Amino acid sequence: MKKSYNIAILPGDGIGPEIVDAAVKVLTQVSEQTGVTFTYAYGRIGGCAIDEDGTPLPEETLRIAKEADAVLLGAVGGPKWDQNPGHLRPEAGLLGIRKGLGLFANLRPATMHPSLVDASSLKPEVVAGVDLMVVRELTGGIYFGEKKRYTQDGVEVAEDQLIYNEAEIERIIRMSFEIARKRDKRLCSVDKANVLESSRLWRGVAERVAKDYPDVEMTHMLVDACAMQLVRAPKQFDVIVTENMFGDILSDEAAMLTGSIGMLASASLGEGSFGLYEPVHGSAPDIAGQGVANPLATFLSVALLLRHSLSMDQAADAVEQAVWAVLDKGHRTADIAVDRTQAVGTEQMTAYVVEELLKQLTQK
Ligand code: IPM
Ligand code: MG
Image 1 (cartoon, helix red, strand yellow):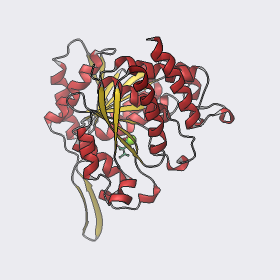
Image 2 (tube, helix red, strand yellow):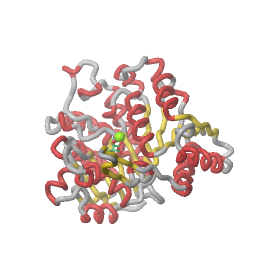
Image 3 (cartoon, protein in one colour):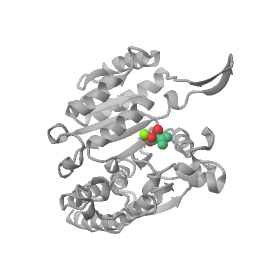
Image 4 (cartoon, helix red, strand yellow):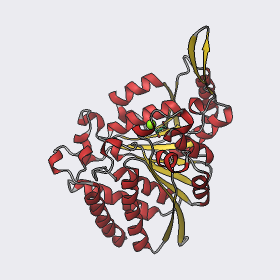
């Protein structure tokens, strides 16, 4: 195993810096117990970069990210920049780095941990045992199509173009089949083929690629039906693959099944082992700076980083086990607490996980 890795750290806005600092403590523990050195290169992205550098994605940040073995990102955005024009919004930084690094696949696993069943807004029998993965296409579709504003016959008009080509669809479908192969071998491709031409292309490509994966069962579902099935009977899903905007929406819905969006990690991948890892929740400006943010989604993102980009599988397992062990002991941040008066803050939660991680890593 390599002994040293370079990790780009992009804290971003809102609770981003707090949860990323907490995640670095987890990485430090991993480093101390495994002897693998991590060097960190910090960069700005989002609102803080707009304020400091006049752009949501400074070139320096993209360079730091490209030179790293992996990128850990907090979150971007906040009310301060909400009135900015599109290219000067924090979100443009996130979209820019995804595109700039060629990260076309966004993996969002939603796994229900038994001790969090009560935190879900759905009935325990519906959500207990949920273990699904949303694979979201991340660098195409309506997010990246041409946008226009103009006036026609005295009426204001806005346009967002939704384009997909075969190659873009094929690579994400292939990756999803590979992922399904390592899970329960069931892939549900979600589209809106009854209305959208891009979805009809999507479905056709999916069917063609499916021939190469006879061991995986593929089904198709319309996006509205999928939104409904996710809350009706989520256990029917193993891997869901879908285009960019549908994936944005369905992954938030899937996240909520598991109790809190504060628990969900994500990996954005391209070809090869490089990846960008971030919690699915946003920058939560309403609680930023209060020390109450749930850092667990970021820790679980660190686990994905260790596993996928650094091939440190044992350390990745240890981080996940440490998170579950701390939850099993009943420790909760406010977002997942049934009794909020018993909730712990970010720092305390981090200390619990780091301590548990020591046990996990020294056992192995
Ligand atoms: C996400 C977020 C982003 C997206 C926003 C912040 C641009 O909602 O990662 O899901 O829509 O992709
Ligand atoms: Mg989203």
